Image 1: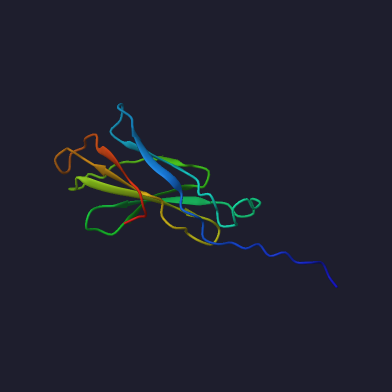
Image 2: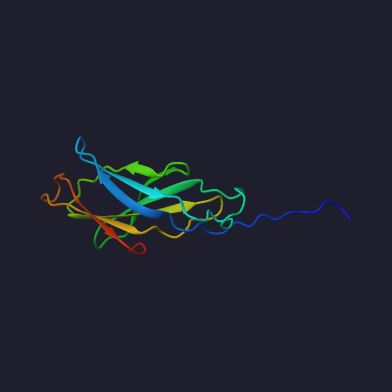
Length: 134
């Protein structure tokens, strides 16, 4: 017969892990950090034929739909966030991973609660929420 064909299966990446935030006192912006998913969509322990190509960082305000805040390369697992000057004391963040075919499920959700009056920047309280995106 002829040469054998190999099929590379690509599926949805697992969620990014351990979304957390830190605060740099020199700036008025939180830094979000996460770990790559255990499975990029090619199976755990498989060769690197399937990789995370991009991450999407999502922002959600209370009683509003989530909106895309940023998209970063697959090798980057952090982002310094510009908090919008919106009239909201709460901000929710989560991250999704994308491979060449699919966008995966959301990471845990991170909630930032601001103690400043709406529209003013202050150092928010960082609250980790375990579970999936809102």
